[in-house]
Image (tube, rainbow, N blue to C red):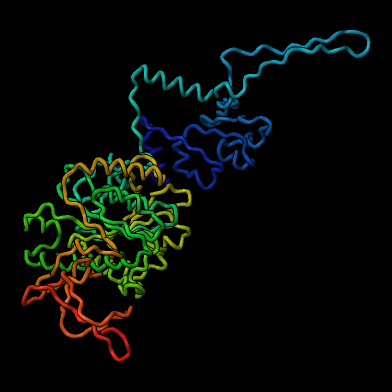
Length: 520
């Protein structure tokens, strides 16, 4: 109210005028504001006290309720004028309607009324008076080339922003969306900077736009043809296919379903190995980030590796995958040291109440979307009165950043099917760009043709493919080993694929039977 009073005191001489409307002036209109308000209009008031407060007269409390718009204006001491205000919601036709005509026969007794044609009533087909006035004034302003007035504040954030219209930059700055900055009356593009921000976590209710945000971030990392280096992506999908639409992108290696225990464990081992490998390389050149390493090692095309996961990922828990024994705590182990090694992680996480502190601390950037209750906002440390149940998908707040953010999407439609089509078109355009393609995370095959394997690894014959890295594994043909399974006949067997380390000739394997009849 202090700002309103300041406008009322100084604005009149500067061509700036104030129009206020209130239901009850008591307690709202202060003396210093009343002293600078020359024109006061009172429509029908609830009681005489309110009428006296505005007009200095009780007349407004006695207006007939059956006459809406009856009012009185006070333009100075003792100068009160009663008037009837106009109603802009009326529908006035361009041509006045003909008056009604009735015909009745005059005779003794009750006359007979003639049946007349029904009058045509112009109802909703005629625009309201206010609509016609606005349209006419706007047309006159265009003809007179009247400049549009400067708005004292910006419009609210749009419900969607096209990612490609926000000028994606290098992979060091990935477009998140548009952030509202009301203190400076501007709306700016917000970026995720992996080198400094590390990892990013999206938290929100179902349908708030978490999976769409991950897909948009992957598209932003793929970038345009002018971007020098690739950002390779892998995904853990625990949400029933939310990330599967990313598979056409040339920068995406694999999107692994959460129930594929073998490939999940293999991905975790690969991420941990990559962090260790890059840690050694960075230490040798004294590089602290991927950007510095690219310059010092003269490797501008060194890819940035990103792992996205969606759904209820049991990160940080001690639960192990039964079939593989690989602990899922390897996932936050990579974020702990990974961002500076060019291995960033993006998550759309579980409810904030079930996110362990050890996991939450691994994410330096947290984006909170629409939640199901106010407790969720409080748990994440953001205001609880900004986002509402009717906030559009992608509307969010950032922890430690007070302003609203609308996450960008590909195209204009956030529908999952529309997003899949946009990603396919984007992937076709990105496929023409030269660059390394990430290796997919494969499964251990059930059948391996011998022709696809080398005859030996070093001096050892090849036994098969190792589960841990899907590479050929050698076998040292010395000593004894039990052969579980079917009975094997005793006697020599020659295998041409195996060669003796000393003679280079074929290896002969002799099967003998133990006392219990089992092959040995």
